[in-house]
Image (cartoon, rainbow, N blue to C red; front, side, top):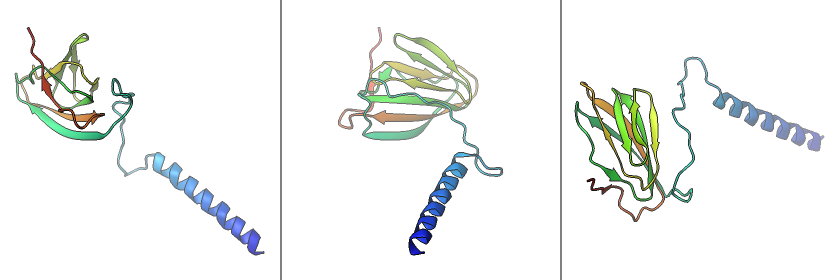
Length: 142
């Protein structure tokens, strides 16, 4: 009888865990809404991450970041408010509207700017494969 009870308890525990996992993966009414914006493999980092940083950047109208790159760090640029333009060497220019994201691979010169008349705000995530390298390096353009 003890053996049967133990097996039933194990079976019940397994079912409960499976139910919790299923409930956690489903969105519940009145709960938070999860919207996946971007999912992409790491690029140019040997698929290794030592550190991730999350920042918010604001660009006033007409403001631009200078040309730069991130040695050993990819960047995810997600526009939260307004519109932004990302220009990447070898790729060209991409217009991003509120709710859109862009992945900039490690070691690729790029810039972001606001060509609009209102402030643009973006969430920026850097995933670094080499913490000993500087996060940002200015890139001279001719």
